[in-house]
Image (cartoon, rainbow, N blue to C red):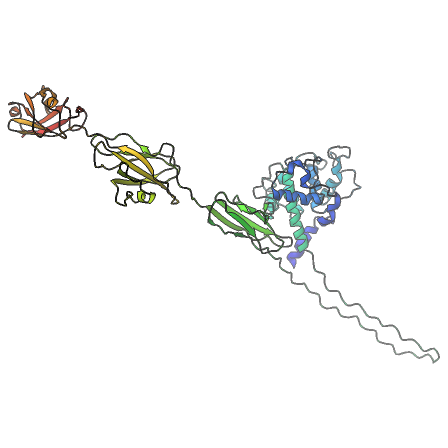
Length: 570
């Protein structure tokens, strides 16, 4: 009981000038709605609802016939008027002079506000800039606004902190009158004035309705009986007086047990949070009849200033979103916050970047390998298989399994993770043949499990280059072995062979006397005479071959590892 009386006294402490807003709202008859103002046509529906409510009570007017001035800064004169009307402060229309020297009736811009400024000052809602100045045309800050708003709710803010308005802003946010991100240092716009005054009026009405005390039982009235008439013809006899009824004893007085203020039921969402498809529509509802649902989709905590949910306009999800909502109703405590997070399911397969996948650079001759380059717009895993040229295309599942279209292991396969929009290189294992065309099929699967269709890349293994694969000494001759048949003319040109010693590179090279192609077509015998016999044990012969051609007349190339072939002596 004490807490309820204290809350009531806090409201009454503003002064005997306060009335319920419904009694004071007739100050300015509502003649317009938001539809009459051009600058309100594209605003948020929730804000438009608040404006219409305040216009209907005469709290606000437009700055012109067709402009509300929604984005204009609010002046202190406008602020004073709004305060008196939302909190039902009694305004004396006969007041034509102000206690502030700079508030004058002949001021065309602000003279109209004298009665509101004086009423707000008298009610303790607002102060001047000094004892003698009010500065009615100056812009008001959100800190000044918050201070006056909470005073009207019976709260005495602590103004000793830094900045001085910090506690007032916190109190206004805690009471859900102002949004959580309110910066008291910023200038208040008329839009801020609408949001704060609407929220302040709602809280004020809740406090006023819940704090009205219940009347105590009245005592029964005293009962006094009428005197009995005296008989005229008989001698006067003192009548026996009829006893006077004692006053009824009133029932004992007591403090009634306060009825707890009910809480609105938290909203529910349909469907509930989880993984959903893009375009999913979410509807909100509360079991509290007549409650208003306020919601946010930016992760912030909803207040009475947040957007209003309308049953006929579901929320359409296009990206991962957290929906938070509360239910509010006059005379009830705001509901707990509902929070549901929706993750948009990824149902889109990765796409290859332009020109990808593609064949890379030609690999080293005789390697029988190929390079494939892959790049896609999503991270995930890239898979490839190598199949015979013009073989039937495998499916994405077959590629990811390393199989060809026949469900047998492909000629070569592999996979590795890739980063979105970053090129990835794959070099295959050795394939069956040199200088042969093959088909490579590539699939990319993202982290959500969506796989691309197989993409084909035409590749070919490098040529088989002519190389020396052996060098032995037998029967006073050196025998050179090549990896493929060689052209007889170039193979039997002795000048195409040069012999030197690894440990004595300064010695002049030795050229064979003759070179003879043997019947195998891949072996050449070099007649070095007695040169080999002069070598010391431990020496290493280095053979360099130039000018020799294969049967297709491709000349052996310098730089291959086995063009210079070492042969230890001993």
